[in-house]
Length: 548
Picture 1 (tube, rainbow, N blue to C red):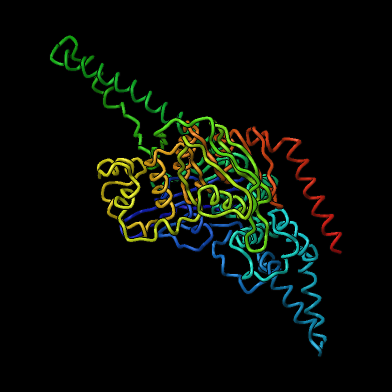
Picture 2 (picture 1 turned 90 degrees about the vertical axis):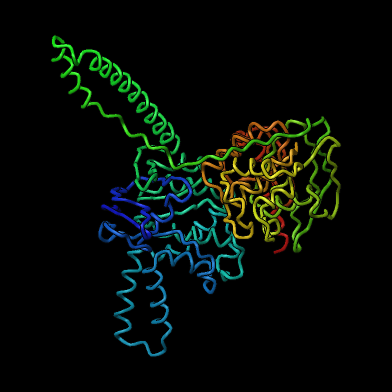
């Protein structure tokens, strides 16, 4: 068990937390939620001991091991992948290295033998003999291929490092597991594997995530951070949302009844306080009036942007025709003879573990990259707006937010432009901020403002939920559901994909395409997807045997 006891945290005069008391017990998974800036990640740092509290303390059951998902992707660059994962249990790693050093000695002494025996005993208690196979299972589950399990970390991609650090946090059955945004940069298959792992995990899990489906799937409890307090709810994210909404509704209804009663009592007192025959009744009602207290209903600190894509032109029947597109990146064929035709009501989610393939296809379709083979053609009634995964180029300038957006606006009027910025939660003074210094979430909201102001009827979005808080994701989700045009998008948020897409295209690891008009959940359960994946795996195994 881990608990916060009267915890307060202040930065100068600003209090982030005030007298927080909460217990996290074994066998439960707790989702930490709250608006951007509420202190979710900060609270995890307090629990882990990385941050000291102003008042109060954190207590952990003696002897229990706490494991944290680390965010520094360069910290273990000099280690192998396997060593990095096993470092998730520092004591086990120390024993392994000390054992190796002893057995490597040329002048092996009796003392060395005694020490080695002691280490072997502790090694066995910590399941050391299964350490490498356990680590390999974690890595394979997250999609890290066996052939790089002993590679050096510095030679891997950022996405691979994310998965390896997650495997490190999960390794060795920790008693308390702290995960800050564990689904970031994971593909949907890896997220599904992580969900099953946490569902079956028997110890304590505390997780911060903006993925609603993930929180609904794994959490037994929800801890809501709002105005420096943490309110604990038994149940997942949807239960919290329904419960908190219902609670506010009930408080408002109770206050309304109290206000009506107050008005009734005040009218009686005003009418009969000077009447001798009614004076006792008036006095009685004064006492009753003094006892009535209205419930304090604080407005939530959560803020929802208003996202509404309105196309300037209705789209025709001819939308997009793609024929035989192929592309090789750094010697690897990521797109192999891709062909499809879009209809005027298609909302297509591109899924699959090959992130480069999806991004490459989007860049080709928006004119940022040329295919090696094949062609594509947009219909004459279409207009496109593109949301790139890497937005570095977009903000490589010294313009203010308002001037930046003005450059894309068909109406050169500052009031018109500020209207779009206001919808995306940029207050008046924010308009003079330089785009170069914006946070990741602010840049995403700028790009969505640009897409809204464009009036396009075809939207291409490459991982638009990255860097957004849950409220902004919900607003974007709703905006895309309402959008009357065509959508092509990739996203790692299961609920976002399920509620938005009516057509699924999966780019398989060999660059081929599976295309099905269906919802995402139905696609995951479909026999066709399972069959095509089986065919692909069998084909890959045959090629490996041929090479041998």
